[in-house]
Every structure is written in structure tokens, then in C-alpha cells.
Image 1 (cartoon, one colour):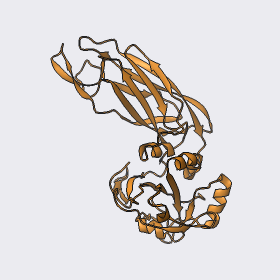
Image 2 (cartoon, chains in turn brown, purple):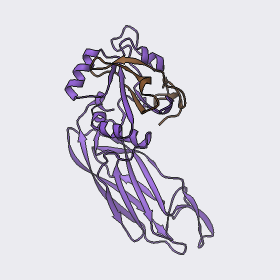
Image 3 (cartoon, helix red, strand yellow):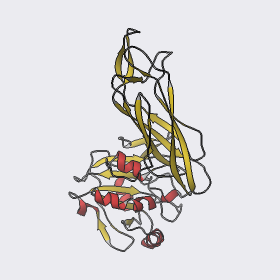
Image 4 (cartoon, helix red, strand yellow):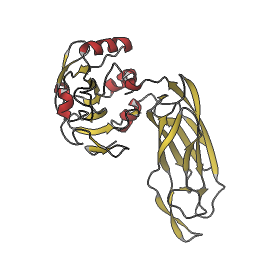
Length: 59
Length: 263
């Protein structure tokens, strides 16, 4: 796992990887597949979280 | 995403909440969730506001392209205090970390569904080998772990080593299902070798060797067996025994090609 905010890919290009280790994850409120509005910070304090960013569920 | 669903109970049991974010519409996510029975939140970030807030919008894609708005794919592990404590971004979009590796590596989850372990015992040591996950697919990373417990008074060698000595080495037989991309040996201690009058890097007691493996280009789904080999030479403070090569035959289930469903 990387601990840097910028990672170098094998082609030598850098790309951003967002908040660094130790930084706060930005809060968000988004609708899910059931139409429920989910607020990330609502779980803070109780659970740890796994946030996955992916490109698309359709391709 | 499907693999994560399969591990959802483990996540719940360990107090980990999963959120998956993409710029897909709710309609696309609803369809996808129905098809694969995904119950954890698949969040719709249409307009990519959250992706931008995280600073991971893929700006190599032109604004007029239909893919504009997608993030650099990656994963954050966030603590109860809301702070990122680990993250994983891999430049090559065709390579993904397995869910098991993430949960084991970042969250230190112990009660995971693992690959079947094989134990080999010799007069010098007991070694236990297993894959982090019972499944693998093309482009997916998984970890092969070998836990070694040495008999009292014996050591095996690490690196760097002068010629004539054999360091412990983990290899995989060539196969179409997966290949070894990196083997991580723990830091060896120095052991005094009386006959040589020098200190050599070596291991005593317990150690774990971890190998990162990448799912290969096998066609289609099926059960496979992968042969892993551990070579070592055990010595005590007076003499060395003949070098040994142990073989572990480990079962894996190869899953079909499925890029976007991996994490």
C-alpha cells in the first residue's frame, strides 16, 4: 500500500491519489442503488470504512 | 464488487463499512446491484463532485469524452476518527488488489476466507503455505504466505549471502493461472557462524515469507493447483545440513475475466 499522495505509474506518469495517510477523508452524501441518501460521516466514530472508487459498473 | 459482497459478513463482523463510488447514474447502479445482488451502498456520484473533492478525477480524459468524470480507481481505509490510515491506487487499471489482501493488509482482519493451507514438516522446520483468497482472476493480486517455524538451535539463511551458502527462497512453478510478481522476505538477523568466524544474515524461530502474485491469462473458470517451492539450507552452530526443496500443492479457483467487478 502506498503512503504517498502522488504515485508514479509504470510509464513514469504521476497521478493523484487524494488525501494522504493521516488526513481526514472528505465527507460526502450520495444516493445509493436503493435511492437512499447515504452520509459518510454518519458512521464516523462507530465503524471503520472502506471507500472504493471505481470507474463504472456498466463497463 | 461481487467479491466484496461475498465478504460482507466478515466486514460487518469486524466493524468495517463499505462504500463504493462511481460516476454512474442511480439507474445503472440499481441494475448492477440487482444483477449481482449487491447490498452495500453503491453510491452515484453523477457530476463527479465527490471524486473531485477527493482530488482523484482522471484529468487525462478530455472533457468531451464519454468517460469524462471517472476517478483514478483506488481504495481508502478510513479509521473511526475519519482519517485515512491506508490507501491503494494502482496505475495499471488491469491490476486490482483482492478484497482479502485489503482486509488482511490494511484492516488486519484475521477471520477471512483463505485459500486452503498446506503444511510440510521436515526435521528442521514446519512450513505452512496458503493464498490470501481461495479465488483468483486475471489481473488480480493475491498474496501467498509461507509461515515457517524452525526447530530449536537451527537457522536458515537470508540475504545478502556470500557464495557457497543458500538463502531461503520461495518460487512458483510456471503455470497459466498466476505468476509471482514480488517476494518479500523479512529482515534477517545476524547469526554468528563459528566455522567461518563471521556473522551471516539468517533466521531463527518463526518467520513469514510473503509473495505477491498476479492472476494470469488462463481461459475460463476452473479449479487449479499451483505448485510453490521453498528452498532452504538449515544449519546449527556447528554444521549445515543438505539443502532441501519443499513443495506445496495449493488449490485455487480461477474465476472468469471480470475487470470492473474485482474490488
